[in-house]
Structure formats: structure tokens, C-alpha cells
Amino acid sequence: MDAAALLDATHAPMVLIGSDERIAAANSAAEAVFGPGIQGQHYITALRHPVLLDCIEGAIGTQQPRSTRFPARDSVRDTTYIATAAPIAGQAGVLLFLEDVSHIEEASQMRRDFVANVSHELRSPLTALLGFIETLRGPARDDREAQDRFLEIMGREAERMNRLIQDLLSLSQVEAEERRPPTGQVDVTSLVTSASEALEPQAQERGVELGISGADSPLHVRGSPDQLAQIFTNLIENAVKYGGDSATVEISALDHDPELQGPAVRVTVEDNGDGIDQLHIPRLTERFYRVDTHRSREMGGTGLGLAIVKHILNRHRGRLRISSEPGKGSRFTVILPHQGS
Ligand SMILES: Nc1ncnc2c1ncn2[C@@H]1O[C@H](COP(=O)(O)OP(=O)(O)OP(=O)(O)O)[C@@H](O)[C@H]1O
Ligand SMILES: [Mg+2]
Image 1: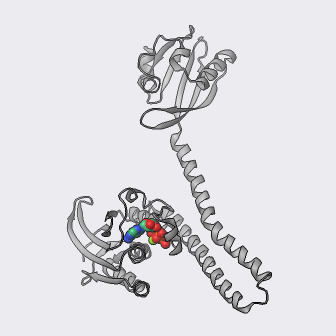
Image 2: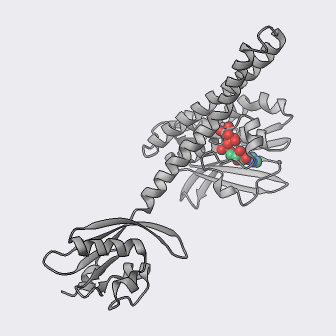
């Protein structure tokens, strides 16, 4: 059988090195990594990368398989491979094959970033608490007035840590359930109305006029009431926190949504704030992503709200659309499959 044809049957890059140390065969995946036309060349000229050459040399010398990590770069993306050079039993040749492990590397990088972010978010309130405890024990020991002031700040910082922990727990619960579709029936109109009513005091405090329209008839979707309420609360709260002086919530039923390919319930939360630069929009649903970290922290935000929204919507087969015109305001639209009135 033709060796090249055999190697071509797999998507993993594979190179067969003959007893004369020349490339006897290479599949197209290997040519995509090392360039076309390497067949017939000496492996040192064809493969070039020192880590690979050491690995092959070692396999030839010891007649034992050797593996190495091989980061490859092309114009499109970086790929990390585990390269293995394996001597072929009874033949004086070596088979080199590459296994793409980029997704594993990416996952562990994400885990590291996540832990670093969580630690960072917890560290500042914790540092503040430790500092105030120190002061209360020492310089402010007999100062009643200072004690009251510090205790109030300490309460706020502890509150912030508490909120972060709650959001983290909620995120991990939503992620765990993401593949399990919700079973209950919920009325979106009443969920949105109560979320909006619950945020009314916060809106008044900030001088934001919060209006709601289209809330006259019940609209049912299949879903978890708690999770859907979380979506609307976060979107309306964001409009109140980051928007200008007016926020409007609009509920409507769509006969046919092209993306969901069926009837849908649409909830639009719009504000007249500074808006969000186009650059940030695709990243807003990433965990801990905030446009203005300082401003968001001051408002007690953790940057997890929209990440939670995205996961809840995935579970409910819904969609989130974000559009914004800097200087004019932002619009967040949630679309959920409609189950009838
Ligand atoms: N309506 C809006 N107008 C302008 N910026 C917004 C708006 N909604 C969200 N953002 C930006 O997106 C970021 C992420 O929002 P998200 O809801 O995920 O986090 P948060 O509100 O800061 O924290 P949390 O929701 O956990 O309290 C915000 O920090 C803010 O910078
Ligand atoms: Mg938020």
C-alpha cells in the first residue's frame, strides 16, 4: 500500500522518515505545518524546528519513542502540538506524528486566568478589611466616631465579597445546568414587571426614569423563573447603573424570529447613557469583563452579570443582542422561544 495515501487517511499531521533519513511520505496535514513538497528532503532541512529534530534524533538513536511539546505558528493562529517520533518495528524508519493539544492548553490558561481574576477581586476588599481591623485595634481604639465610620466601610467591603461569592456560585450552577433544558412554564411579562419594580428604588436614588411598555398580557416561555428573573434584573440594573437618566423596558411577542425559526418573546432594555464602544461589545459577556473597571467596582459590580446572562440564555435556547451608539445609549435585547399565551 502507498504510504502517503495511508497517512492521508488521518487529519493529524504525520511524516514518515525513511532509513536514509529523508522524508519518505508526508500527509497534507503535515504539509500544512511544514510547507508543501517536503517529500524527498532530509528531515533536518524539511522540519527545521530544533525540538523536533532532537526528538527524532533521540528516537533513531535509542530506537524508543520520544515525545516533545511543539508550539507551531502560522499566519492564522498558534497551535500547540505534542509531537511523537516512533521507530517503526523491524524497519529503519521513524514515524513522526503531531497531536493538536491547543484546546487543552487554552482550557488550562482559562482556568489560570479565572483563578487570578477571582483572587484579584477578593484581594482588594480583604486588604481594606485587614487594614481597618488593624486601625480599630490601634490608633482608633478609643475613637467612637472613627469606629462607626470604619465599621460602615467594612460592612460595604464585606458586602462586596459576599456579592462576588454569590455571583460565582450562581455562575457555576448555571454552567452545570446548561445542558439540561428547563421544564417549567413562566410568564415573561410578570417576571420583567417585578424585576423592574424591584429596581425602582435604585433608579429613583440615581435619578433615572424607568419606564416599561408592552406589559399588558402574559407571554409564556419554557424556563426557570429564578434564572430568567436574574437575566432581566441584571439588564435593567445595568441600564440604571451605566445608562443615562432614562431607561425603557419593552416586552413584545414576535410571530417569527428568523434565528429561532419560530415565535419568540422579545425583551428590550434601552438606555440613553454614554453607550459602549463597538470594540467592547463582543467581550461584554466574558467573565469579569468591564468597560470601565473602576466605575463598575464603585457601583459594586463584579463583571459577572452578563456572563451569567449568557449561560442562562444558552440553557433556555435564547439569544442576547447588544447594540450601542456611543454618546446616545445602549440596547440589550433578549429573545426567547415563545410557548404561546
Ligand atoms: N447599559 C449599559 N451601558 C453601558 N455599559 C454597560 C451597560 N451594561 C453593561 N455595561 C458594561 O458591561 C460591563 C459588564 O456588565 P456586567 O453586568 O457583566 O457586570 P457589572 O454590572 O459590572 O457587574 P454585576 O452585573 O456582576 O453586578 C459593565 O461593567 C459595564 O462596563
Ligand atoms: Mg451587571
